[in-house]
Length: 212
Image 1 (cartoon, one colour):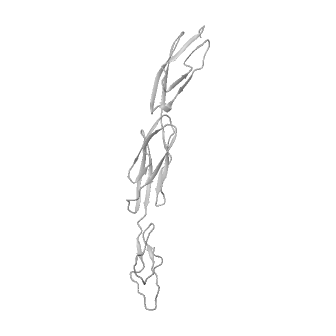
Image 2 (spheres, one colour; image 1 turned 30 degrees about the vertical axis):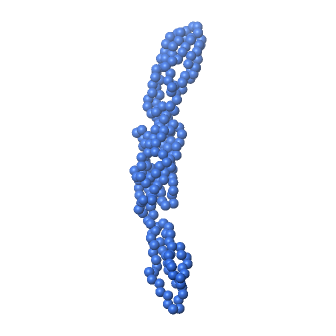
Image 3 (tube, helix red, strand yellow; image 1 turned 90 degrees about the horizontal axis):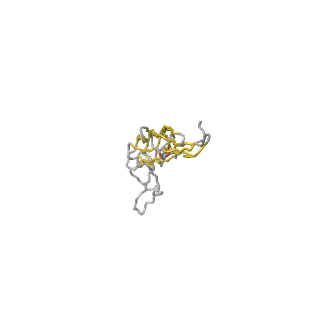
């Protein structure tokens, strides 16, 4: 070491690099804390030359900082049927820095609450609905693909659309003999889902129960 008081100053800092303290005087040594703030940086490798000037000479420190976001998705498979209204999954950055993300779907019957954004260290929840209104009865398979940079995660989506209800009547004709006042018929749903039915008649001498 030298003699006397060393007066020093650090320059060439950056918005992602903080130095505390940035200047001072010492006759021995002083601890300087250097911190990087990756929360304002996108994926990449960052570097700068931090210079230290003083009345005792000049030194330079080469600083490099890696920022690596990591895409993490909570789900791998979804199953929708007539009783499943909505499902959801979570997107998290388990790495560092700012992580842009976007979502593609392979079929337009998959409806998402959001399709793109950026996260740092928080978790975002995406809600998934399916539109069965224009679909024929049967099984459907598709996928949701979440992208972030070169990384991607695929969620397999299976949807079962019930067949429409089908009305079936046990008889096509009714005959009341002279000593018969009452009879019955069976209404059956030979399809799927719920069958809503009603009987329309305008005959004063005929009563039906139930009518719907």
